[in-house]
Image (cartoon, rainbow, N blue to C red; front, side):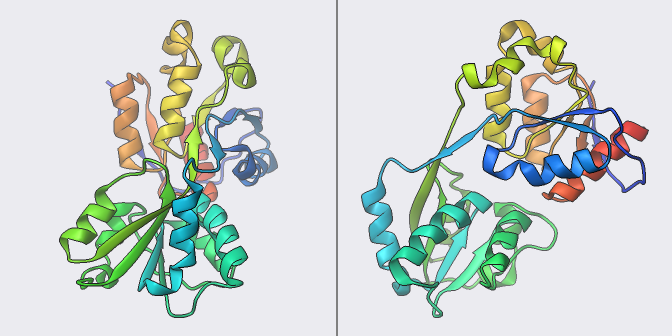
Length: 266
């Protein structure tokens, strides 16, 4: 039976370790560079692509009305990157009258880079963590816009509506599965000699499972896989992973590397 392994920091390096990096290509380099700086080999095969949303008209309307909202919530780094590009084009800068919140450190870093202060969870980096914050409790009659990808989780918006908030969505990107041609390495998993997988989203994890093909899934599910949330670990169990599943202490590249180091030492 596989188990989730809690992670602590160690000094071990990653010499000669082949690590699959599945982040979208525009977000993969920082993690890949950290792996390679410690002697590892980062094998870059994105299992998710970020594209513009289907409905750009509704998105433009939401952004044009941004000053009418009391708060804007960004659920991911992609939401910040894609949303802020459009916001800047429309407004010049982010409206001062709108409070900002985000789900985790990735989105917080993007907002910090843009000099936008944000409410951020300090321990649990997901919708549940954000909903637990004091700033999200008394939201009756508040107008809140949630920047997210198409088809995102409904928990955040649903819970805030139950608390009396008026919720609108600004779906500013969509996630798609890459073509099999662009991920050919995954169809020959055993010859790729991957020592450990890293994945940072459930969509990317499910895409990985599908892209390897049925003939290679036994090899995939026998490969250690580092995840960044208990929800992702649960999905790994559902998909049939038969190995330990190291769980990073944070949803950050540094924590992912520490998880790999500790797994290697164990």
